[in-house]
Image: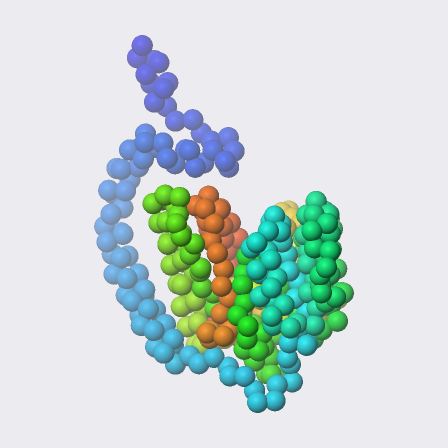
Length: 342
C-alpha cells in the first residue's frame, strides 16, 4: 500500500513538449518548489526595486512620447493615392457576412486592385457565390503554402503600394487616404495603423465577455506602446497582418522573394517556417534599412472583431511563441536593430 502511494505521488518526467504544461500544473511539483522559492526570496526582493523603477521610468517616457506624437497629415497634392494600391486579402473563413463587410469597406476606399487568397475549397465556394464581383477583384486558391501564395499575388500586383490584409478587419471610408500619407517620405518602406475592437453583444456567458475585454485591453496596450516607441526612435514591434502597407518594390525584390517562403531558424534546423509572416516582413524592412511609421489617427484606424475565448487564447499563445523567436533573430542574427532602433 505504501509503495502504491509513493508511486502515485511520484512525478513522471515529461516525454514530449506537450506534456510540460501538465507537468508544471502538478500540485506535487508546485509543493516541491516551495523550499527553493523561499531560499531565493531575498534575491527577488532585491531585484524588485530596480525592475519596478525601470518599469515606472519606461511608463513616464512612453506617456511623454505619446503626448509628443503626431500622425503624418495628408499632403495637399499627394503623389501616392488609392489608385496606386493593390490589396492582397487572405481569408480562410466561411466567406459570410464578415467577409462581405470587410470587402465592402476595402472597396469603399477605391484601390486599384484587390487580390483575394483563399483555400481551394473556399475558392470553389467563392466562385459559386460571388459571380458578379467588380472587375478589380481577383480570387485565387492557396498554393502549397500561404507564403508562396502571397509571393505569387505580389508578382501580380501592378501597383506601387501593396496592402496585406486579413478578412477580420474593417476600414473607414478615408482609411487609405490617411494611411498612405507616410509614403510621401521616400525613406519609409512600411506603415502600420492603430486598431480598435468592435465588441458584439450579447456574449454567450460572463467568461466570454471577460476574455473579450482582456483581449481588447491587449490591443489598446499595443496601440499605446507602438505609438510611443515609434515616436522616440522609429522603432516598431511588428506590422500586423491585419492590415500592413508596404512599398511594392521591396516585396518584389529578388532577396525578399527568395527568403520569405524559405525562412528557417536555428541554423536551418527548424523550418521552413509558415507562421509569423508579419514578423519576417518587419524584420526584413529594418534589416534592409527602411523606416517604419505607425500612423495612429482616427481616419487610419482599423476596426476588428475578436472571437471566442478559445480563439483569443490561441492567438495570444501563438503571439508569445513567435515573438521570442523573432526577437532573438533580430538581436543575434540580423543585428540591424542595434544601430537603427537603439
